[in-house]
Image (cartoon, rainbow, N blue to C red; front, side):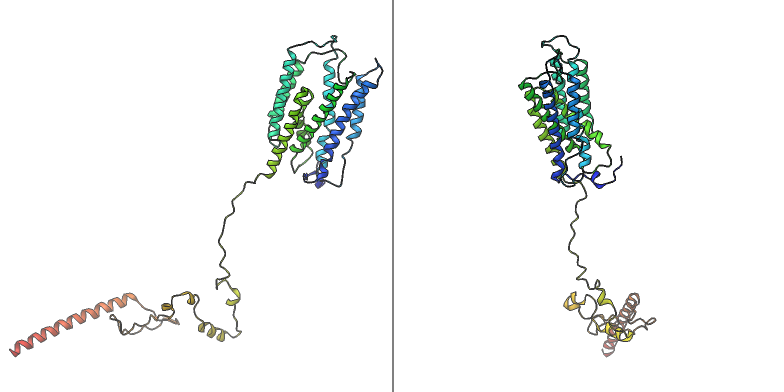
Amino acid sequence: MLNRDQEDSVVDFNDASLYLPLAQTVFSLCTCATVSVLACWLAPNGTVSAVRTLALCCATGGLLMRAPVRLGKAHGITVVFSALQMAVPLYLGTLVVEQLVHTCSIDATHVPSWRHVIFHGAVFAMACSGFMRARAPLEDTDRPFIITLLALMVIAIMPPPSVALVGPLCQSASLWDAADRIVRAFCFGMLYCITVYASTRTRCSNYSNTATVFFRSAAASIWVSGALLWWLPFAAAQCAVIMHARAMHNTAPKRGYQTVESSASTDEEDIESNVDNLAPKLADPVAEQNRLLSEPPIYAKDAPAEMNALVDLGFESADSPHSIHATPKEPIGKLPFQQVSLSETSREIQHNTFSASVAKAMAMQHSDGEEEHER
């Protein structure tokens, strides 16, 4: 069945009304256990029927679990309740199997047997598988279910010793046994329901998840039906473990990329990033050109004080020891600056230096000749 409503695809675990079906399920299981006891108590001696007791329990469970108890409209209540409804057939199934164990027996007394050890060992294995599921309720593994299935096969092959006229559907139980049956139903219902809630994901694609949740929850809680009475506190411990595991799963940090820390942007301080200032302010192109030429160059205010004055590359200062009075070149095209060739300047410097050296040597020779002539 495909989902057509958001209520059936998103489970809102933060809504308190979502947990009303949990109380409804536990109450239904305890009521079925009470009906099974009363059906055997109220029937006259010799008229107790296991079929009648089972029919009354089925009718009671069907009426109480016919529809979920709603308080408002909690998202996901339909998905959760579809798995909780299976708790009643599962509990009644355990009663039927327990009753079948004693149907073929002719011994009316309890006899010690080594099969009790095998039975309780298999129940202990199922309890261990339940704690395995409690540690990771959302893990996609079938190991706990397989362990429980193997333990049930061992119990089916070597069941505990049977006793005639004994069973939950036809035995007139004592007050202690009746209290034991009701408390056991309460523990089973709480453990099963909590496992259902913990095994249900926040988003469900379709109702096919109901079968998966049912089998996992049943395998994790069915051990309560065959455990000894002093083992039942472990059911509360299993509930605490599974709730803690689910809470830690919800609060665990999501894996993802780490946030890259970036420095504050300086675009607002950048003059070039101010588009409004770059837009023409005058409609006349000539006036706009004159305005731009009159403005100081960009970043001029950030330059040192000695560099504020513009350097003219067209000529050198006369005070410089290497000053060269070169004829300025004609500008190429319409460039607003003069083109300077470093190669030509270096050649001119070398030529002037050579000429000065030759003139100095000739002057020295001329002065020496005049001195000799005077002598």
